[in-house]
Image (tube, rainbow, N blue to C red; front, side):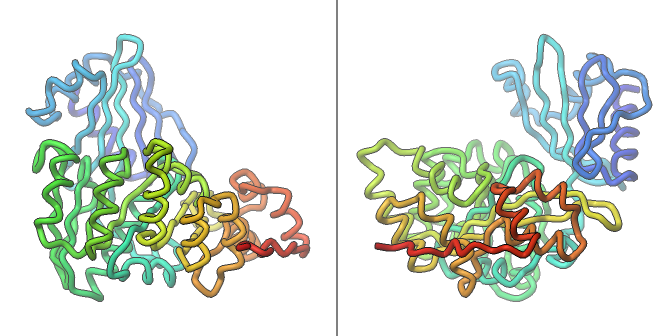
Length: 366
C-alpha cells in the first residue's frame, strides 16, 4: 500500500510535467512545476510510507549509509513511467524524500531551446576541461546529456561516465558509452577516477566536481589528451573559476593556475526561467570560452577581469548572462521581470533593454 501511494504520486508528477517531487513526513507532497512548488491534493505522507519506500528500494550496499550519514542517493525506475533520481534524508527525527524525474529520451539542443554552436565546439574538443555550472535544478545534467547525445550522432569516441546515480541512459551509436554508477559499478568516485585513465576513454563525464581529488584527476586527464566534462555549483563563470581554487592551499595555487590555464576549454553557466509561451522553462546561459586572453588572466590570477571577457570575446563564443537575457526578453521568450530576477547586473540589463549599451570590453590585459 505504501509503495502504491508513492508510485501513484510519481505517475501524477510525470503526467503534469513536474521536474521534482518533494515528500516530507506528515505533509502532502509538493510538485515542482515550471520552477514553483505546488501542493498535491492528497493526505499527508506518513513516516511509515516514506521509510518503507526507502527501505524497499535503496540498494543493498547502501543500507547502512542512511543510518550512518542521515542521507542517501539512489535511482528508482517505475515501469512505463520513467526513472527518478532519489535523495532520502533525515530531518528533525523524521524522513523526507525528494525525487528528480529523469526523462528517458535525451532531448536535443533544439528541444531544450539551446543555442548549440558553442556547445558543439566544446563537445568536440580533443582534450581539456568543460564545466557546466548553475544552481540545483538548473538543467546542468540535461545540457550535458544533449552535448553527449549530439556527439554520439556525429563523432566516434569512447565515453566513460562516473555518476551518482546514473541519470540518462545512452545507447551506443557512433560513440561507445560505459556508464559507471558509484556504489554499484565502483565503490567510490576516488577509486573510479584512479582507474578511468586505464580504460582508454576519449571523453570522461564526472557527475560533479566535488573536491580536490576530483579536480586533480580531471586536470591529469585533460593534460594527457582526454576531454573531461563535469558540473560545478556556481552562479557565474567568474565564481566557478574562484571555486576551483578553493580546493587548494595558497602555496599550490600558482601551479594550479598554470595547469588550468592550459586545460580549461570553457565554462557554461545555466539558469532556467519560466517561458512565456507553451509553459515549461527557458534556459539562459553565460558562456566563457577559454581563448588566449582568458587563459592569460587565469595564469596570472587576475580573476576579477574575467567578466569583462564575456562580451568582448564574441568571436570565440563567449557571452554574458545579460546578453542572453536581453535576447530572450526581446524575442518574447521570457518576461522582463523574470529576467531581472536572475540577472547578475539588473541595472545594466535595464539599460540594455532601453537601448543603452556601455562598452564593457575595456582593456583587459596590461
